[in-house]
Structures are given as structure tokens and as C-alpha cells.
Length: 100
Image (tube, rainbow, N blue to C red; front, side, top):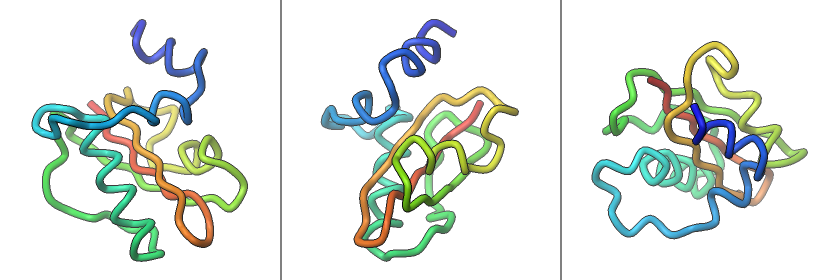
């Protein structure tokens, strides 16, 4: 719970700036890779493959901001987020959120 609260305080964009050296077992890294795949395709969609330790996945898109793309993801505010990834594409921000 503290980690999720920290994300709200710091802001989503600054949390996602770090690199993902070990993508195995890193829920934020998995989410970021999925968001990058969407951005490279220019399509908001469920990419498939692993969901890390998550059981549910939400995807979102926004032309406004990264935070807005996150808030547009399925299940946002209804389930506990364990991995959040955002990528800037040519036409907006793409987000993937993995949930417990």
C-alpha cells in the first residue's frame, strides 16, 4: 500500500523513467514493455504474453497526458495496481496497468 501511495505522491511519469534491467519478475517493467509495444504500433490493445505477477490487465490511451492514459485503463480505481507502464507514441500516450 505504501508503494502505491508513493506513486500517487510522486506522479506516474517520474516513477516510470527508470530503466528495467531485469524484466523477469518486475511488474512495472512488464507493463512498460507492453505500453512501448502499443506505442510502436500506434494501437491501444492488449499485447498478450506474460502479465508478471498480475492477474488482470488494463490498457488505456490519451492525447492529454500520461496520467490521463493511466486513468483510462480498465479496472483503474477498482483493483490494486502492481505494475504501471506508459509510453509516448506518435499520437499520444499508451498505458498498461497490471493488477493483483
